[in-house]
Length: 236
Image 1 (cartoon, rainbow, N blue to C red):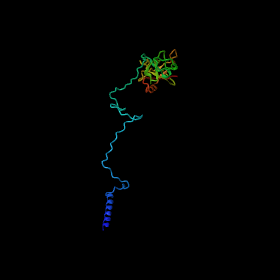
Image 2: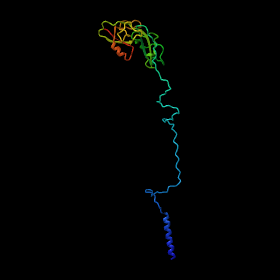
Image 3: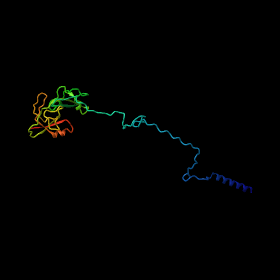
Image 4: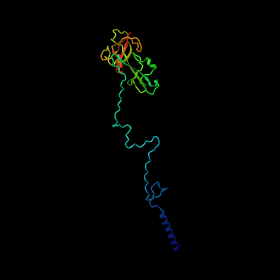
């Protein structure tokens, strides 16, 4: 009897031990194989500070405290004004026109434009009525860029009344209207131009000019780009 009771107590103890190892609440589905209870009191990881800006080429540097955007308008800055250079050559006499010669700075073999026209091959063909005189002074008002050097002088226009007959006119030339007007003016609105040109022979610096008549049509077209232009047709 005692042996049976001892065996029974041993069996009950073993059952109790097995019951103590059994999970009362099984883990959620999917955690059966590697389920472990979560440790209590785990501290949260502190957020790390952002990395400092890179100093490698191409990286943007932080803007200065008082910096302005590149495309922001500076209201305190004075507006930029670009006035055309005043002409250094004044031709105020009647029938006097201003002629000019422009030369590339690279042709002069100089770092900047000389004050007077140096001897150049192009000077031999310059001018409509007269060749450039010795010592023709620089005229910045004629220069289109910093790579160009222009020189001007005054020449006398062989002004004449319009020819009575001009057969087979051909485009001849254009020049700047005389600053003080012409002795024989063309019809309005071109009264600042001579009505015609008389025939002259070459002499000294003066060039030969054929008989010519004023061309209102060509003058109007030319004045779209040159407001003081006077254009003429040669008469045959």
